[in-house]
Image 1 (cartoon, rainbow, N blue to C red):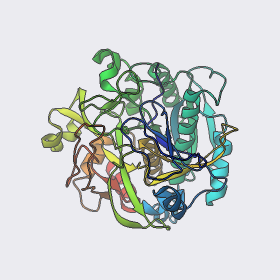
Image 2: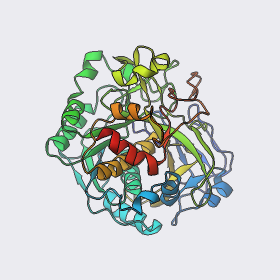
Image 3: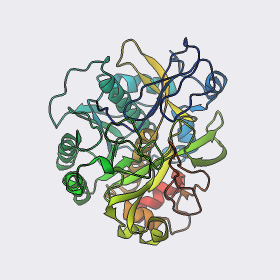
Length: 444
């Protein structure tokens, strides 16, 4: 049996349960109110206390011994209010989030989310299905349920970073799993978005381990949308995964016992977004510097591609990547201990605010950052990898180096953060006050 593969380690709520259990390599939080339940793909779902009102960081610390953050705290952490105050809010730009099945309540849930946190509704949020009619949504179907949660996370946190950008949910009718399955429909849908000029940036919070494809050709045959995006100056992002230096085997549940990486984040035409762990106070100020996400629930994906050679933009990093394409390129918040608050209602039996971590969070967050940069530049910036790596060599670039932590996970020794580029955090994370204008100037 296969499972969908969104990059998400999820926390959403069962407060009445007593005791703790673990799935796979991820230990449960040390509290009597936690239970681990089977995950979407090989990632780990943790249910904490579902709430009718959003929890505070103090609530999560007291009840679950983890940190959790609101969109307001995340905005403060990445310094986006400094841009909002100058009118850089993403207005006039569109972020496309691509997900199997989508969510029937995503627009309504985003509105509730906005009311709770004092955010404006986006100018537009709509769902399109260019790859074919969706099957009827069944909240009891764990696959659809997981993708609905993923869709909601993508929409809410792309919007949180770029509150006046349009949100386009691109839903496909076949679940993406390991290997080729689901990708032909995704490619068709993304080509439609690009050809019809519907988005400035595409965020993909899913991936399949490169080793699960039957051949190199079977993967290369799925690249048409990325080539199309480059020629149309559309930025494409991909989450780097939640299992550190390993990732799922074809069964979708077992991790490889050695280093692997995933696609599409490994594609040179895609900007791979890895994961960090933030330590914030109640207002969103940093208490300590960001580290590589590796909190026991999961770890930020990173490593070397087995299919793609080192691209020219990584020539300066040849000592790290060797002859292979290395990922991630950049990293943002993804930790479960430091998860973000999400509101969902697609399942009538499971309505409310929960907590989520995973690089599924990091990719839409960076999608919002790109929308801000597009607005600042007054145009689509397109393929970011060349400009991003050039920017890293300049002063006052807004890239904040991550120098602590590693992505060893599930018995597989990973990579350690270090000064400069590394295979745990990429180039680092961002301070948008400086990063957005610098990226706009470099890519422009």
